[in-house]
Length: 299
Image (tube, rainbow, N blue to C red; front, side):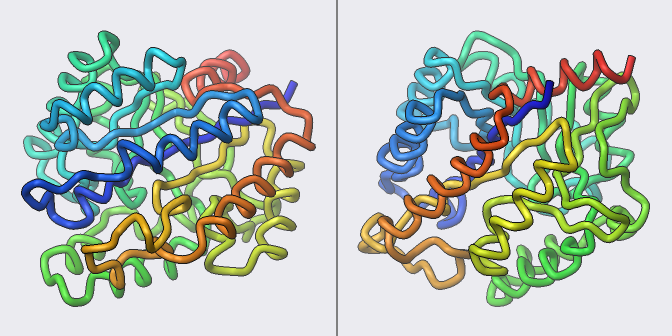
């Protein structure tokens, strides 16, 4: 049996805009509603990785609770979404994970099992902290040469914000594209689920953003190749994949990757991507279930 999950890294607009006073973030309203329409259409549930600071707003807490009640898995995406997470001192790194862990458990009534670092900022120190906190799996390893243009493009997007620019570049995983495993493996008792990639020693990672970067025909070909190569497959998406200009009538959007554009076009591309996955005739699972199946295979 082969499996497919959909990992929704909830990089909120509130976070992107610096938590402006009085801002009503569409991420926790119409944007997530759009994602849920596709979950219902294709009969799966997301694994949603939430930024802890977003839970300071009661409206957001209630929304996250409702997603959990509808069967979506809720995972940890750190408190502040620092893109140099793996490089932080252990005490600060622990607090980023522990604080969000507690907030998610309080909001949903269930402690999270899964984690993903902002911008896939992986490090052994981070893995030590996750193991100490009792996590079952992590998805922060990016084993592909696409890592390098991804990191530098992300830094360029924040070139006018000095602190964010340097955080993007302050990493401890520069060799991960060359040395990281492309298949699930056990590390400190946890399951590591690397970002899926196409086959071969220089295979490229595939997530929804590659369609915006490389073009959709190339993206769909890569997606089919990765599905054929990876038994434990998951597809990473972000709120910006289903946002449009009309969601931000009073906010600047030029520094945020793929945030604007036609909602009709974005809906089409997301549906086409899910159709490719569905055509592979895999069992839809959450990321936690994917990790459990991979662990059974590895044990």
